[in-house]
Image (cartoon, rainbow, N blue to C red; front, side):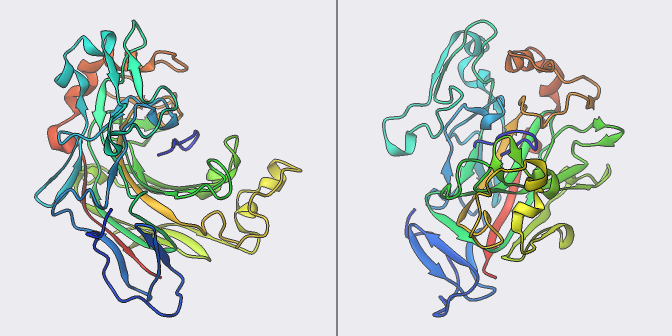
Length: 379
């Protein structure tokens, strides 16, 4: 899950896939447990109504890497942080201190190296698999969850619908998004990223007088030559909904239409953003030739929708904080300011020291990203 100014990094037969396979290839193809399929238009090719937490569909991330943004959470597989209740998936943050005690983040050692395949740490960069608390360098103080379909389901082109309720709580950062199964055009963001929805859980976070907390959700495409040449600015959309009817107060249907000719986002069937793909593709949309003369086009010779013409998988997560730019230095939070300083080398520790200001804003299950269903349809 990305900051819009920084890097984001980033089974079985019982999966339910509904519909009849089309003998003639349609626009949408999918891969289920490694088996490639084509589909009829409108076919429901993946769904989860969350009657249970289905480990044949979803895999947990196990890492402290912070998504490339030095976020403050540990992602792991624990029913306090990922669970189904009343047919609703909850991705809920809790405190590491609740499990290991108050002193653990500063004096303990947390290892996510496992002994079986389901327990393997999934991301080792940024000290993601093992950390020791020492002075200002603390273990990530929050536990949360990130689920993905990377081992079970990926697809090219289609319509995604996710009915969800965004969390409430200062410095919570939920996201519903897609990443490429294979980095066929190179490392992030050359192979693309599709953000269906991101938001911030703060009730009173403003930037230039505009509430960028619970009253705002955003949609973004990440694509580019490399980390420093990302065209997201030309594919980023924001939607506002003022209190007391802000996005966190109820469930909404977040929808993505991903086609060879356009990518569009909707909330409750109202279009909230669209990128029409011309013959020059995302090379032209990102204005890379003008901004970076002489740089080679990583998608040359591909379909105009490249890098968004390959298999992507689905991710759901609830992150916390971070220093990658998603929490602007100039933003004003009430009643307490952002607890970590701009450019801080010890942001996680500063965040933890200010627990009494932000933790009371985490109101039980309302601090969870709650997901009613995930559905993917063929074009």
